[in-house]
Image 1 (tube, rainbow, N blue to C red):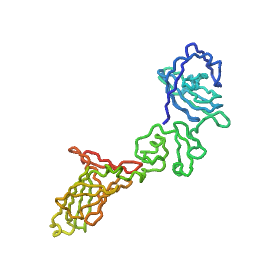
Image 2 (cartoon, rainbow, N blue to C red):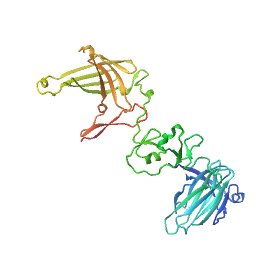
Image 3 (cartoon, helix red, strand yellow):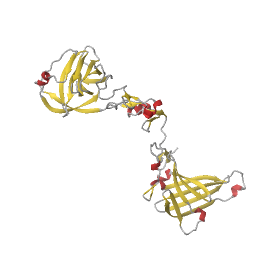
Image 4 (cartoon, rainbow, N blue to C red):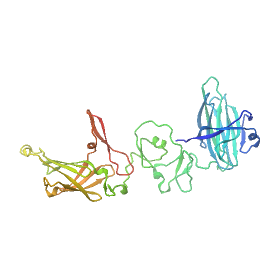
Length: 406
């Protein structure tokens, strides 16, 4: 968004006399005659927004604030035309022009006004930040709308220290866009990769709240291209960003401490020989675990298979960490489980945030899926849902939350 800054305005005392002309006029930085009549009081902080070359800036003045401040940067030896227009061509409007001193106070350069507005050429040998105080008159109306415009008046176009809206950016030889602007790329140039250039643009000021997702050049998903612009980010493509896999953050174990993502409840659902539905559940806590396995016959072939009793197995115990990515279960001595159920688990996570424990069990490799809803307890009349989380760097597990039951 456009940056609103604060400048220190040195107010002129009542003894100050400044000529008001009907323009056009030339205001030159270094006019000792005008400066000699000014007596400064204590600085006063005033808000000011940046002006961009060739871009009209609208502002409103009223009885509580009969003037508004805007500022822009000028190269040494710069020459610009500054215009202030009144929405009512019959009303008077004008400007006071200052240059910001190194101390932050303002050096008064001149004042000009005219019916319906005025234009002044501002020249400065020193350059720097120029401040325009726009003002206007109004009769019975409570406010008036003014338009301020600054244009470079040098033949070579060299007035602004930094590229202005519409100027080239994001490629070799191009400078950084002026303060408050961002470099906007066309989708085909892939966010400036391969030295593809863009143009400096003003961020959007207001956006409609819609969901038309785009992927920004910063790898973040925005709800619309307008919201990306408001954040000062160019759009790479339409649609949501895919999380970026970074192997450096995949290791679930650091400093021989089990990562928190390995705790909680893990589930696996599957079918064996099209006959049994199998559910395995592992609860892995700090230093201990509990494991349950239930085999239920599947009624695919009618009655006799459905008479087969369900099978249930459970075990508890502790665990150790034989390698940075595995957890070795250590069942308690009683009851002694079958040897094949003493399992080694490894943590696996893909870029979409899906989290699994991989194990070899009963001679088969199986994946246990993390049950995130086991980590929270919902109130009566609520149910748990799991929502994906947008992220740039994996892992980014989904988040559970409670919602009214359907």
